[in-house]
Length: 66
Image (cartoon, rainbow, N blue to C red; front, side, top):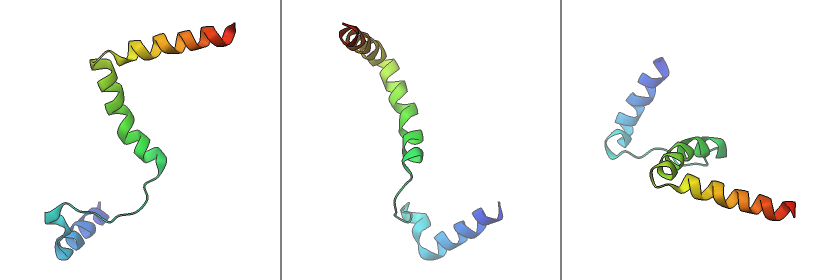
C-alpha cells in the first residue's frame, strides 16, 4: 500500500498523473491475454460467436477423424 502512495506522488511530480500516460515497455503475454480474453468471451457470447466456433471446431474434428 505504501508503494502506491509513492508511485502516485512521483506520477504527480512528473506530470504523468494528469495525462494518463504510463511508462512504456513490453507487457508479459499472460498479462495481455488476461486483459483481452474476458472481453473477447463476452463479445462472443453476446453476438453468438461461441456457437459458430463450436460448430466449426466439431466439423474440423470430424474431418480429422475420417
